[in-house]
Image (cartoon, rainbow, N blue to C red):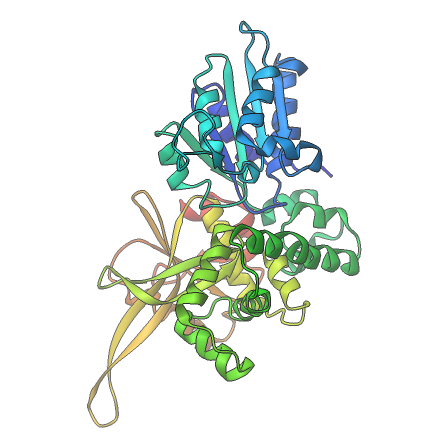
Length: 433
């Protein structure tokens, strides 16, 4: 089963030989290496590049451990580029494994050599086109791109989208949505047949890869249990408003563990750096301003979220919201959680303010959409609840309700569009026109 990863291949092809470093980031095991070393490599070979023009190193492999030293890495790459008249394509996989060492070429013991120095040096070679991958946003995001002196292009790779899974789904297509929100989009999951295989694989990813990476990268020695519990609490609360203070109270009341909000905030930051968790800020639609707290957290992959909870809490309404959030982010939108204030009078005539939620305020350039996620709107009262916030938004940007039901897309008298979840995920264009 081979996924084309067309969205990312198109980006790589457009950026080929553009004189910039291509920085491919994303969650470990989400398909970065496959994209670069299989799909893009084959594209180069099919378009006239010879085998010896592709220099590839996977730094997470034990056979290449010596090249985690920046000096050794620099040497081996240049040794594999002997012909100055040839164009070489350099692939360095999981570059965050490169260690920081004292610079042996200067007398200052405080000056360090890092992978940045290696890549900047290689970038100066006129016959090299450089691609690196990494699984840690702090090392391979804005800070690092700045150090590349604005000569780096980031390509963010996500787990398989619903549309990618749907295209190659070999069973009855009526089951693809249920399987997707249950097992997510980690590519290897879809080579497995049984629930037992898939659940074991996803749990092992946490234990042997993600948690291990966070512990080692941040030198955490005594708080592994805290990290485990925090991941579970966040998994249980996807789509719910929270903040580190509330989470701290949860630890104390339910687990009898005292942990400071600042520590929780720091650990969530580690999960976000590893691309495991994503955060949606709250935005006051009428006031046109951000509300600092609380926020919502979503898992980057619903299957990983479910594995944290041993597949016990498969609430479709929350998982649908998580899938929608991920897909909007993948499409390149900025996504916030919307708040619309409503002024009411109680029975005594006293003014009260009520906050109504818009699931997603979606922006890209000058585009804006308001999107509500709902399992069903077949009941009139439920429909009114779902659109209460949308009809009170005082602007003309498009308003959409995504429903679980199989419905033909339509608009009501308020101009609100209704579309089924599968149609929304399969056709990226028509609902936004």
